[in-house]
Length: 537
Image 1 (spheres, rainbow, N blue to C red):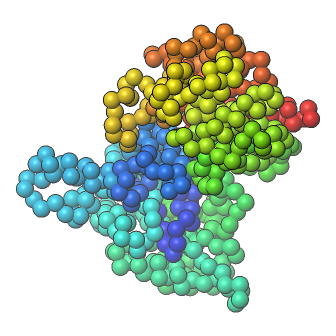
Image 2: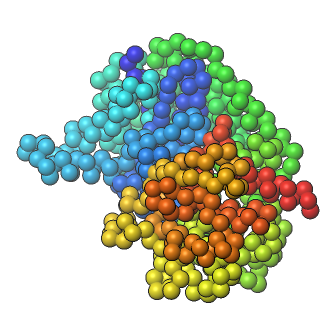
């Protein structure tokens, strides 16, 4: 069949949840028997979010094939349980970089290179790339930003052209807007949505379906008013009430029949009734926990929880698996010292030391790890968290007081964490780290093996620095075991202290592979250890 294309645009205000609506619709269409994927078009000029500070854009999400992407791709994978790739995230930076490279190579035969047609043609090519693989029957494309933004105009124009090129039943536009509630008059206002749709029309695009974010139910009269003035049918006005969790949204959209109206507009039949029992069971466990855990997340970007989005969601998935509510306590590593560490961490059931870059807050992370190691608090380190665990052990067990990473101290005599050899001559920062999926061989006598229940695993990476194998024997002789190794490079992937109740740290990012239906085993084992501690108090 001809691939069907759905475009999700946003109006009135940003941060309405286009990614969650796109992922929820994809989940429902998938449940009805269709192969679906989602891509994100980001209007910023950065080639990817890999060089962006997390305070600017939240977490940088990494795909199996090593793309540094927008955090919405994490939602796509968590909802669909299907991996994304390089093709699922397109930025203005990538578009312009490609067009300029083509121009330099003489590909345009002397033509004047312009936004229309050259930029818009490249956007269309990228949009259709996933559809042309033959893997997907439906491609949902989320357009970042808000209608009316200067940055988004080329994307809207490209979609307009695609809409013209394709048959009506092969292309659909969903517009997500906000219906503000005025408490003084106690009414929802439709005018901002009308203006937003009008703005979209001025760019040549007619919304087929309206999804309206709202705090209060929309009456039949208001739906009819919206339909009349926005030129859609009343059944195409979808209510998107605020819900307790993002994982409620697919069920809410099912109730609102978003999937049915979508299939109807695309002239597709439902192959099957949606089977969402596993999803509902997850929600039941999530909302009705038998226990509660206090888990500390020690990081340097804790003012913006989106910087650790995949970790937080992985806790939700793993918590539901063992029927526990996970209360995450955000602890700024810069504010941890020897004097206050006991007060900050002493009552916690477990501590995760988070990924990051640079030397800010490093000593706080090391102090936190020393405390949890000495006080038998379950510990989980990820990426930089593993590196800090190695440094802490070197300083306080091996007695190498100057032990450090060459990222923070290039002059240290005990460079227990060092830059990979193939990274030392790289000067460009973007897309040059060790990225994407790599194999790891797990020791059978390890906690990691108990979690995975297999000796060969694959996990995603995003880093430049590694455990220095030069010191491996010193660590293992004194109790820090290397229990996971990359079979090709022989580099350490997992370290554990087996005499500790639970002390596991990994160089990779397990949070990227946790989904609603497949919670990550390392997060599950960590929470089980924290629960054992909690119940033993």
